[in-house]
Image (tube, rainbow over all chains, first blue to last red; front, side, top):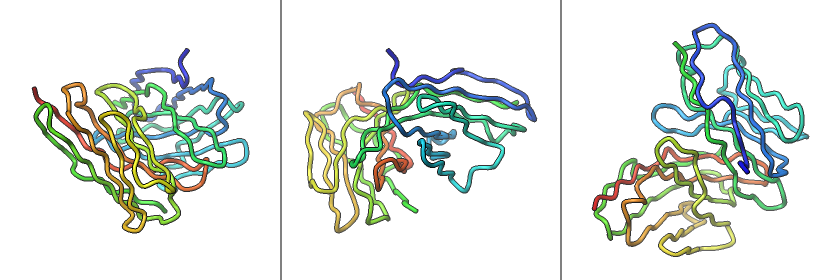
Length: 114
Length: 112
């Protein structure tokens, strides 16, 4: 069974459109994340979310918004897509115990804005 | 906030040689330091991690060292093999539940 799964794997869309990427984890983790990996492979945190708190990286445009219907899901909505949004987006999850633990990543969604 | 620097950005070695990747971090509160391997077109996957109460950890051909005073940690791969070729990322985080902050990655190429 896939621990963290994202859909779709590929997404091609035109500038100005609104799109969503879905993420689900079956690990029972209480914290989920969204990362953006640009063409230079840099993994940049966008959001951290658990049932108590949403932490937003201040550099993320407000066109991006996470939505969590329940603990196992953290979807990413993007409004008014721009060319610079093209990247691979990774969802991840971890368990926020006393000690830090491994973050498990989804397979990624390659977003191409044309 | 935390900032993680990683060097080198690319590393080419011959099969059987050792490879060393170094990272520094800025936040003295950071206490968890994982290393991830990302093969082309795949997701990042944990290969080894170390916590701030440990100075060194080894798992077969892979070892990680941590110097809390100097705020740097390193990944050592011995007897490299072609299948070790990938992008390696170091990361750091503070309290549980906070996001990992990644270095910019090292592309390791192992030629046979």
